[in-house]
Each structure stands twice: as C-alpha cells, then as structure tokens.
Image (tube, rainbow, N blue to C red):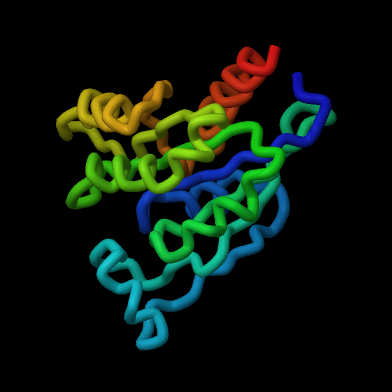
Length: 186
C-alpha cells in the first residue's frame, strides 16, 4: 500500500488517450490545457489525428487516491514534438512513465518509436510501461510490433493493453508501474 505521493507521466502521440485517461480516473477536477485546433494551432495540425478538434498545449493534471494515504499525481504530456520540453518540467520526482499507444492510429508503431526516442534520456532512468489503448475485438494484435519498437529504442518495458477510459483498467496499469518502481528502488 502506498503511504506517499507518487508522480506519473503519460506520454504518447497526439490523440493516444492521455487526456482521456486522466479525466476518467482523477479524483479532482482535471487541470486541462486543451485548446481548440484552429488557425492559431495550424503549425501542429499535421501532427493531429483526423477528427481531433483539440490539442494539449502544456500538460493535463489530475490526482488519484490509492488506498487510505496514497496519491498518484498524473501528468499528461503533449504529443507534439515541439512541446517535448514539457517532459523536462515534470521529470523531477517521477515514479514512472506510461507510454500510450493508440491502436487506431495510422502509424501506431512508428508513433511509439518516435515518442520513445524523443524522450530516451529520461526514459533510460525511469520505470516505463507501454499501454496499447483503443483495442477492440477483431483487430490484429499490436503487441509484437510494440515490443519490437521498445527493443529498437534500446529499452525494456512491459507492454499491456488497457481501456484507459475505465478506472479499474487504469488502476491495474498504475499498480504495475508502482510495482516496477518499488522493485527498482528496493
């Protein structure tokens, strides 16, 4: 059982489900920096999935209680490469990172590989779990390709599928990252 406050970051391509995840599990009103994709966001429009009407301009923030005394501080980072510096802002004190893969994206494996390589320095010293989101019956498995991308990025991390809109599914992922962090830090 947690008896402290832990900090988690969610990374991934635009539209992967980071903001949705935080909104679905946060026990406090989410602090969101979602902005409409209009003419002011034109430089980022090529990085957005079709149909996406907003983008995270800084990061999303929420909190989730764990047990009686534990708290997870959740930071959802933007998927645009131009905002990669936001990871530098939240990296101190991170217990772990969840890389979110959008199974519905046109290029989910390439998106993951780009995300992992962009943040390789921080990820090399932080526990990582890769979550495949938006997985529906009848679709082929992305797990082998995701595992290959993680290996090509020079990393080792568990890969799981989860519905990031479902609190119990997300809690299972959070428990996995807590277990990895506790094992890593003794």
